[in-house]
Length: 462
Image (cartoon, rainbow, N blue to C red):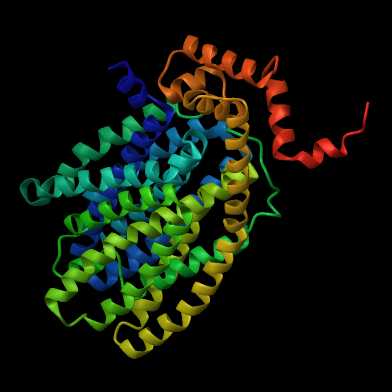
């Protein structure tokens, strides 16, 4: 029981639950506003206002969050998130209740702006609070849980709880809860390891271009989410395959970034299938489900990519950039799609022409960002195994050693391994004794010499 309590209250799980709350509230309000917009303006105008203008305002909100985080960092996080959540709650009232087109559009754009700001802030929290090997699942799993929750609400009384005044009975208390959690400031902690490379060495510009192109190509022929209404589907329920894709993408990306990137690139083929089957009702419905399923890989990959870059550079304000670039790509792809909606041949040609440079840049990004790391990690793993074998370390002692090398405290090791601190001290003492070291610093120096023997050879003789 204590083991499960420790797991459920760990920083990563708490952060994932926090992201699920934030995304659940903001996405539910967005869908409620979209329903209002369609009723007042019609499908075509709603497409332009929600997926072009609305997403552009979301991108502006994310950019504002990046700027705020760059200036203030973790110290400014609580106040920024609290203010954004309270303003979001206030703006959602006129956006959902008024019957004036101008009011719905204006307050809706403010709502989208704050929606983007909130997402930028909680992506920063994911980077700081969640361990690197769990970030994909923490993000994808939390998004999946929130998407399922919104889909289940759509089943109640024909989706009444997601529309009009009834929706506010759910949105407002949850928005206030977002603000209260942010005000407590429990989520943030000092960033983990020191930066391994400078911003100039990290392919930030290349990654930005790849994400914009990926999202643009993906959105050509796929007007999310207003196209669901045109296709005769319930938008909330049609996003349930999206939840499955998010969870799968989070798991795959955490296991191996290479497989996550492969699935993301392969999913670009689906728009071509969609365009070829738009007049076939049953196949099109199946394709919509598959498209939503694979859209999860885009959502997770573009976030995981910039979380990796933020981790490498130690500049955590870069964490939301993947979502920002994705939104810009969503806008570009949607605009092209809407402009060429009546010209299918031109739309296919533009999508095809954009696909090839996207694939080439995508491969270049992988080579630049992950391939050297794969070689380095393989070599480091061999050194680690040899070091453990030479010093006759047990399986548990190996786990403790790895965390000592990551500069984890005894308390952090106890939390990660679900054991007591006294047990951790026992294992640390055994590791030091077997390695012939007096303290952690000497152990780390000895391991560094094993990992980089050229340093030992270059050291001056005494």
